[in-house]
Image (cartoon, rainbow, N blue to C red):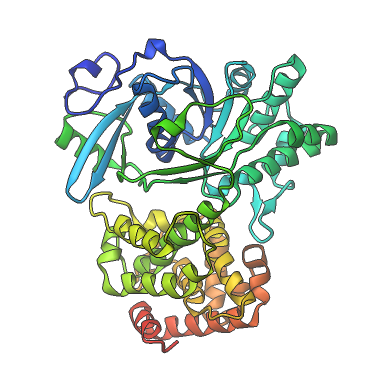
Length: 490
């Protein structure tokens, strides 16, 4: 069985290989966060464009800032930066190999990263650093300039450690050298991700020099974008499936669904690849699309994650096969989430949710409940709490969304219904567990986390519904609680 590399590429016949020559590519993008989602999304769109014979000056140089990025870099280096992408649906699987990344800079080598960012050929810097990577205060949803990582970069801006510090250092060198700034493009699931990224970089700049912050705001482009493709983490399961089904050895393959979506504001002063030719939708305002996706799809993931996790369900498709979980999802979405999502051009919101249900139910993806439950302290304030706050302000019922929060609280207690230990699954796990244990007897203790719940914590209607749900959950268990909610008895 060949291990993926440029040397073995011609011998691999079970997967579509790039039709372009790597020798014809030159870099135009530096990307921070070379994880599975990036390789299943942005890299796949670029691969399709390159295969069409266009955009060969938009190849990617990878960059990372975390210690864990080194393992990904090492795996991809051994296969000449190639990636096998396997698209799976219930009745089909197909594999193709992407070659759009031509280098991956060593994590921690700030000078090499800054040098790459200073190169005039680099016209876009993109990011997939997860929702929790933007140093956002959960309650205010604003950039937190007091975070130790940001404070360190402000004091050592010649050798920064964060993606934002490195990007700012690159912009400063370009400015000083008379080189036009690159466009900064976030590909993370955050409402107004372009604005959030601008606030982070300008916020860091303000700690160094207020005039630098103003220059960033007035000169650098930060287009907003909505990205979507279900892409689970890679485990030995995926490597084994790739070997058995396609006869390919890959140190870090990507498995994903066939569906993908990317909606972007067309704000790229330094130029951009012609991604509209391969399915990217360019619009004047991304907000309606990202609002729909974050509230309905990401909110849907958060809705099924915790009841399924508490009932020891492992895979997402298994959760959708559970009649109580799938019915809970449908009721919360149809009664509390979808009614407050603003209209989206040429989109039926109920049909969009039906598509989400089908995608969640895909048995071949192998997406795990644990992945959906990850990092709730960052995800709940983006995916669930805003919907609940909108409903409270409208004087509407919030029972279902309060139950989602109660289930998250119960999950953070650290054991499933069977008594199995839930391993830490959040950067703030110790704090969450402590609050969840207090909340068992006093539900208000959970809502004391004002940095997460913000104004919602002070809403009597939500606090009452949350307390009722959590008390019922502890007294009767997850299954009975879901049954009661579905029967309108909560």
